[in-house]
Amino acid sequence: MIKGIKKSKKKLAVLLVIIIALFIGKIAFSGKTNKTTATSKSKVSIKTQKVQEATSGAKATFKASLEEVQSGDIANKVGGKVTQILFENGKTVTQGQALVKLDDTDVRNNVSSSEAQVSSAEAQLKATENQVTSSELSMQKMQTSYQSAQRDYDRKKALYDQGAISKSEFESAEDALKNAQSDLASAQNSIESAKLSIETQKANINSAQVNLNTQQNSLQNTTITAPISGVMDGKNVSVGQYVNIGTVLGKVKDTSSINAVIQVKDTDLAYIKVGGKAILKLDTENSKEYEGIIQNIDAVADSSARVFSCKIKIDNKNGELKSGVFGKVEIETGTTKKSMSLPTQALGGSEGNYYVFVNNKGVAKKCTVTTGEVSQDNVEIKSGIRAGDEVIITNVSTLLDGEAITVVSK
Image (cartoon, rainbow, N blue to C red; front, side):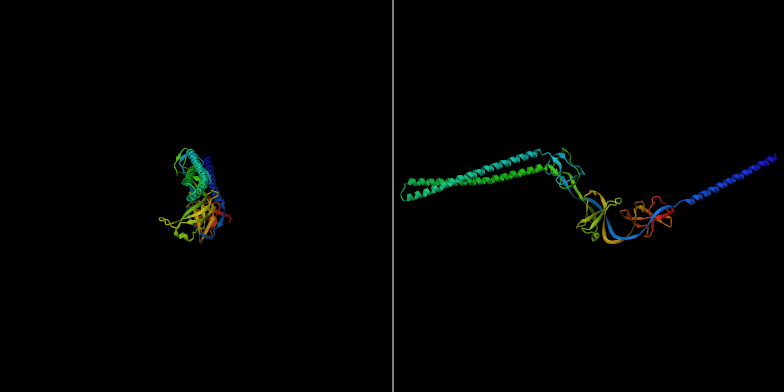
């Protein structure tokens, strides 16, 4: 029995030794695996670009608001009820294009009445002119009769003075001359009166024609047209509405060119000149640049802000620029500055918290940077790195500070 117990203890001891050996082996194998994993982790392949400092023309930046070069109100010159509206906001119109129509029934009646008045006055003038012509013909006959009576009187007076004819014969010739003279004077007065009537009737015709022209203009004004070519805005009218004279029914804006308006200090006037060039950018996301010409600078500064309003004219035939939008304007100062720039793809983070990674002897080093102007696909770096630094330009979004890297292209 004792021999059996010893044999069991021996087996237990062997089993224990085996368990311990397996446990130690597992630990050793696990450590070896972790070590192998840690040492076999691959480095991140990246591309880099060396930072270089460049000298360029210095630019001043100004906030700008965009506005149309010119605009015109759509207003009526006659009152009336709106019967048709021929425009909508945002619609492009041309100068003279019909936009609103008013009820023209009464005005057309007034035109017809005025035309009748003109026709009547012209007919009266024609009749009076015919009367004058007839009177002038009659006066010619009377002139002949008067001349004949005068000759007869002169002859009979001579005979009477010689006692060759009776007094009654002489007096008869004298009466005939007086009657012919009276008839001639009456005809002359009639002609003068008719001529004065002609002048009055001509004045009446002019007055009737002026009234007709006024009514015709009113008829024309019942169709309200665009004062300039441009884009419609501010629609303020509806069909059936009665509009009084001068009511603003909308606005047309000429946006074929756009003014970028900036405010400049007196110290800026040293390099901001009429006729000079300027560049407009809408925002940091839209890198497109719009070239403009400085159109005018106010002669007097704003009394409160002490700044001068400056307008920069920009071609906008494609309609990309909209009035009421804000942007920024860059104008060269005539001086130079040194700057560093990087591809925008090298930049990580968000506005106010941008960073880049620099190759620090095979390790990615995260550097906070301050950015400046954005141009095309490059961004100006004002601080955070130095000229000569090797900046990582790929895998920026997935890199970690201190991560091992391998440069595959510079």
